[in-house]
Length: 455
Image 1 (cartoon, rainbow, N blue to C red):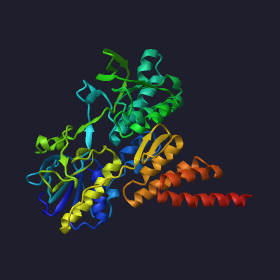
Image 2 (image 1 turned 30 degrees about the horizontal axis):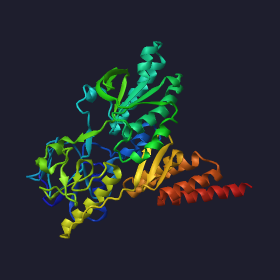
Image 3 (image 1 turned 90 degrees about the horizontal axis):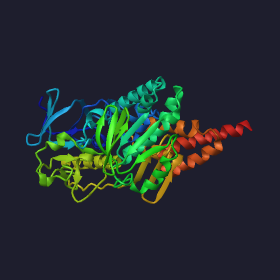
Image 4 (image 1 turned 90 degrees about the vertical axis):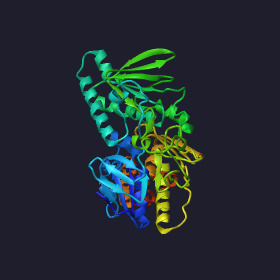
């Protein structure tokens, strides 16, 4: 189908794509906006671990695009993109439909990178989407169920061993999460939780090496040892092959095998195939094959096309592939699109790195705020979830999700009014979320009032 020329098409509904669409709607953008994504739901990836382990509900972490975009005027199309023709300004979909555009926003993110490791793309579990979380959940529950019914100790050991490849933030967060809640699952089935093994294979000499969370390494190393079961960390362990019931890795020039039915792959990403296929010369790409964009987030050869998030390399500005970068880029791209429509000058995108947040198990996290203040444990957990919840798209969704989180985390789990006061101070002063402050203050006053009445 052919559409009017004066419309903006956004390909990819991650942080950059969705926030671009929402900001365009908020700024009363004078052109039609179409958002295309193959999935029905937006995935708030930093909180995918909370969805996976049951700490948070699906509406909080993976809300439907139709709900988030309701009343915005943005047209949502659930379909897979087959090809992008930059010369003809056309996006072709798997359904056979196609959309022409006056401006295009590419926000496809990245994909799991298996680095040509034999069997990894077939036998290892990625952890990138809601579907990945559901698949891994089912597999682990099946392994635990089989293990509790297995008398053969060697077979049971394979079923109860989980190998995680990659010692970056994703691998560390996954290891900490599993080391806390897998023992609870297995104990509930009648199994011996001490039999659970969580093994983290790190290619380098240090976890979080080169990651934006690098400053949090000392805290992470301590917190990983406080989990329900100890995490085995294998340094300088390079995965070489993944089989259905074992993982092979090289360490100290020796080839080793680890028997396991569960290998989780968190060892890096690759550029999205659609981005790789764009007609952009090599000299206008970085060493990851991502297109280089101007400070205003436009392609060098096709200025009508904006690219943001994980799939873009900003000219003379190295930025980490994080949610806070992506959503800020989305807001700025929206401002520049409106400027184009109104004939105004475009402005360079400015990204403010506000700190880092790292999940380190159930109700535990580490936070580095503006490289000035570090906190860990339960306080870090409150800061991390409170901060992310204030970033959830649209005010209605933000308010609903935050209300439930505040009620559950601060009040249901901390019923002592005096203890609540301490938690409130931490949540309000450190998180700095206005909606949290209002809700907490109201709830605290009510609780203290009820306490006075009972005296």
